[in-house]
Image (tube, rainbow, N blue to C red; front, side, top):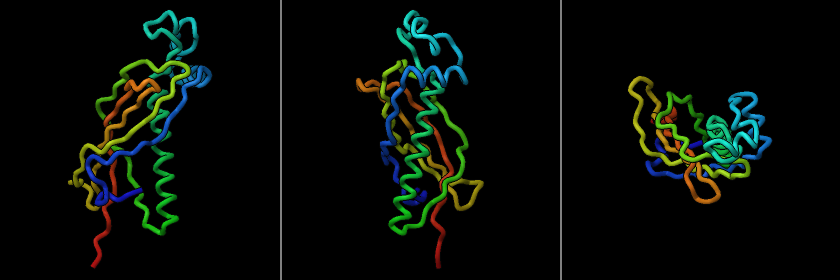
Amino acid sequence: MRFFDDIEIGHRREIGAYIFTADSIKTFAAKFDPQRFHLDEEEGKNSLFGGLAASGWHVGSACMSLLVADGQRLAREAAERGEEIAVWGPSPGFRDLRWIRPVLAGDTISYVNVVVDKRTSASRPGWGILTARTTGTNQRGEEVYSITASAFVPMRAKTG
């Protein structure tokens, strides 16, 4: 992963895509969001969604999984080049979570992360706070999901 100093506002990362199958929708819903339109095709078809719909929490969880996997991939690639790896800290939170359109069985959602703000942490020397907006877009080009989240990112150690 990159250091705070190396990241520019506007930096864009395509973090991957996830296919929402009927089975994955039902499995997630049974465990975490057991509403009828997430568990049964007929109920989904007769709901406002018009089909078996993924839980918004499932859509967000798929996004998080891809975000972490992409960060791990970037860290591996940097290590292979012999670069120092920035180990990011936790997230102090998120805002503006939106489930814009239903995600239905068979949809493929592609996620993109764009840095929208960065600032030096006032309370944690050596750290910055990076804020990025992540969006999910279906195979028809329709935005279905967005979230703005922050993370603590280490600054490069000053030498000399």
